[in-house]
Image (spheres, rainbow, N blue to C red):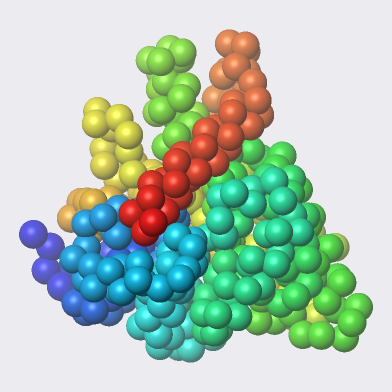
Amino acid sequence: MATENEKMSILTDVKNLGQQIWLDNLSRSLVQSGELARMLEEGVCGVTSNPAIFQKAFAADPLYAGDVAALKTQNLTAKQRYETLAVADVRAACDVCLKEYEADGGRSGFVSLEVSPELAHDAAGTVVEARRLFREIGRPNAMIKIPATDAGLAALETLVSDGLNINLTLLFSRRQTVKAYEAYVRGIRARLARGEAVGGIRVVASFFISRIDNALDSNLPEHLRGKTAIALAKAAYADWQDFFGGADFAALAGQGANRVRLLWASTGVKNPAYPPTLYVDSLIGEDTVNTVPDATLQAFIAGGTARAELAENTDGALAALEEVAGLGIDVEALAERLQQDGLAQFDDAFAKLLALLS
């Protein structure tokens, strides 16, 4: 088992390489036990949640039982009961992470709460709910998570113009990711046109990793298995460097705008034949985030490698993607299907969550 110094050492090494490690988990026990605070002391820099995480927490964490029973006696919808619990948890986690947020000048220490999956294709509804949740949480280090559908990108533009911190989720496509950057820039420009500050706005673009390999590996030759997702991530990072390294964005940066950061999500391996730290070791790069489940975090602390590999061998990554395309596989079409699958999974988790509270 890793010592406390060893835990801090590898996570500090990652942070020194320009990447933040966030925890992809949230529950009342995690906060109230002091475990989240300990993780932050060891080098974790933020927290993400989603409907599936809350569904598991509400079902398994005994600390919710009293509040759930009390809420069921009140004249509230199941969704209102859910939001009462989730907003309280996110607010408490924000308070634990506030020291990190303040010490890092507002670059880290964020906690994400997702809008209802029912709004995935409703831009106006997403904007209304995101504004309300951000207001109800009432913490500067809250991030509202919205899906990267076309409606979600339209909402992103408006919410950035409003000044909200946003976690754009369920990205699998390089093309859609660049469209997200463009929506962000439009929101920044609109805010600047009104003479309002943009320096406090933080946005992450959550690009999902392991689901790509899980979907493709059975159709690939041996030498490409477990490689496509990392190749896509490297290519997406090169796209990010091109977009935010250019003169157009430099002008906005001069007015205080921050770069969107790529956040690697779904980084727990789904194939047990792969090393448990595959999607952490391979994806460390400057100005990125990796949100990891508990088991992946512990595996990385115990046996991971802190080395900036993300920007290395981009040509090789592009060649691998060309080889995949040469097999008749359209990774953009796959990205669309995986996003729809992800939305369906969150819909299912949200329905189960609401059933617990009905």
